[in-house]
Image (cartoon, rainbow, N blue to C red; front, side, top):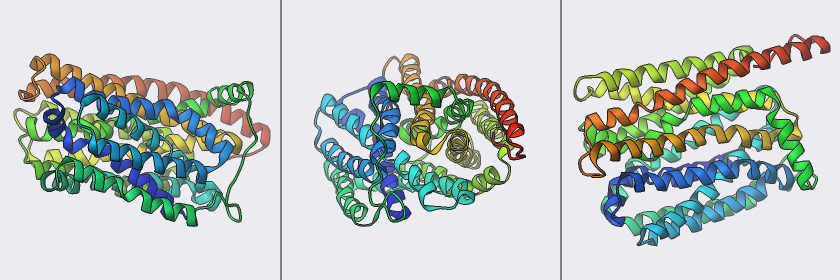
Length: 418
């Protein structure tokens, strides 16, 4: 059951990431520049982020199985539409629906975990959900590079779209919302109750801390994996297409390796979860500094190190969901997760767009003349987002610790959750 859910999420990650290695091909197919190329990912992420709260409410109301099935259908149709798109507006429309279907997967699978696993295993299984699902990004790197080169645009994307119906059949046959419960339905909410529920989730300090952890940790991975990693490695660092695609896959392997470790640490040391997130931000920013400050092209081992630590951002972002889970009642879990999930994708959206704008500014809008200097300017925009995130994490974790301590002293408990 859980494996099928993760497979659907992995397929969503594949569709989300499938443009990463096709960026240069897309500029030629649609006759666009860097800013217009960035709009593909910007629009997709914008739809994803805006859908998170509505999807959370839908999951709380109709259950994971129903919403996940709808997401799988939308993804398959949207990717097929992208395969046949022959103009920029049609391609944008298709990517909009890719973002919509993508938004309807992760929260659904994450909501299934507490229903099927013991509480003590939830942090680890949640980490595994996020990290194993990222295998979809590996399939969107080297295999998609091969498919584009040998099958062409339409057949490559159409083949990818056909995987969806197969997983949908398995989902409908085997996935249940809970033990002995095929469909789980929540109470119907009127607009006033929806507003009250969302307000209660947001004003819970743990939700806001989770939001800023998720804002600060994964956007560098999205930046590299969704759009700008391939052009950066090929154009700025002088790597071949195949080697660049392989390095992008390393981020996923690193995430798979780091995910279980972070899940175990978060479960054993709940008071230090935000400290773990801050440590990962510092590591990612430090290695980026090493690469951007390197005179000329950075050596392959340094780029390999960068891909590894960038990959750690995904598992680190899952800490935000764990903080939200321990801070909200079960009835608000999916909607709170939706709020938290917005953080990383809002940050990724803004970073990706800003990188495109800066590249156009430094190269006069010519996508064939990207230079290492232009990429250094563009990639440096990440420091602004890390700075904002660190300040907000530090601020909200103090609120969580004060509130948690008061509540647990009143309850006579020594358990803490930050």
